[in-house]
Image (spheres, rainbow over the protein chains, first blue to last red):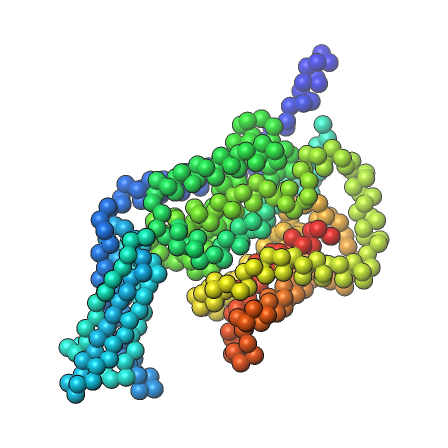
Length: 137
Length: 300
């Protein structure tokens, strides 16, 4: 009798309802994260980065300078590192202006925004923008 | 075997909340420096899903081994099933805290792709989860089960009474100095880095308000909800700013001042900079400084 009572005393107390609720919530959260990782693994395309740049329509003019906003997107399957975008403005009067911008990382499906700044009004036909380079991480 | 002290008596929900907040407090203390690290964001952006699963599994294994020594709960887990359950909970707390911090600091937005978000969350959750498992060792100084064996309820009550009666301006001064000490320990290594300007640049005024609120809530949680060593003692202290709300607020202001000073010391800010820049940088660095300050006050 004494042995059994001392054995019972050594037993840790059972988990309370609150502790069980915490555990099941934690387990659900962990299962969700693992499921999302597995989903992104299955859904992942093994294609190299496909980078595109798109000029947005709203050009701002502030203090005699023209701000040309753009979006650069990675539609490929892999992350691109050190993505460089360049813009070249060639005016009819012979004036040329250029700008460049670098993005440290561009994940698959990610879009980043930026702007080139020119001192001449950039007509769409005079402005060339392109993604110049990237490297694989 | 002596039962561990429960800060909220028989209220299982409040006791549970206290234990979870205690675990999260250790997570914040351990995880915040890595949240303020650019390289971890970048690494998280490019890691493939199989590696993320490996990292989660490894983290669970390390947390399990830590929980074999001491868990984040008041009672030490003894059976294997309890250790496994507590390890899952520690990992979930780590994942939750890391996600909240990444959203708060605009490292995850609605525009962030799923794989990048998962990478950042899993990488940042590693130190948070380890911090949860180590929370009792970090913040209370000794394993909870050992403490429970050493202390009897009557002795504990006596120490609380003596703490309340011995409260003097020297105690307030000690609080101020330990807040400063803790703030400097955590934030000094973050202040000179590029992360502060990067995070400040991404923080809109509503985000800054959210960071202020998060700083106050985490600080209050660490000192007054988590149920660490001196929690009840602190709640009974009388002094210039010893009510929980006052102490949290004054400590936060002190941490902000320390943050501004550290940023100025490391030439991140100069007197010529606009006031808004000072405000942004100081609030961003104020978050880790406040967490360090709260941990410092627990040491008193």
